[in-house]
Length: 131
Image (cartoon, rainbow, N blue to C red):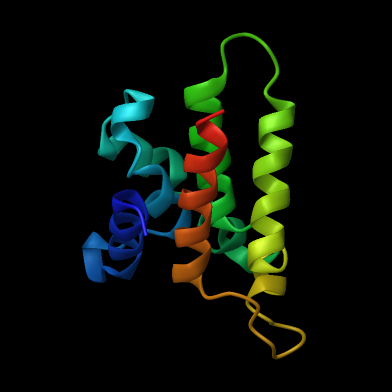
């Protein structure tokens, strides 16, 4: 477990006013790499938690990882290959990319916990960013 993975999971587990959604937990551990402060990253990720608030869309952890990927890798040229690799590796580890599918809403079978989605998204992002 990397330091970033550990910190992201701890952020996700906070409760009350200090709560971070999955997207925020992933994005906020990359302040140094993005050049943005935690408050700004938290604001950017606010609408992406819980599959964009309704479980119907992409997992917030994956959205956070893609957001950071764009902030750190984009230099005017497309980053499609890196984005596709991040997506593919995330779905392989977590079983799906859509929040309600990961959480087993229709099947009753949880494919991956939120903490594990956050953990996996950060780890995969660290791996993809090294290239």
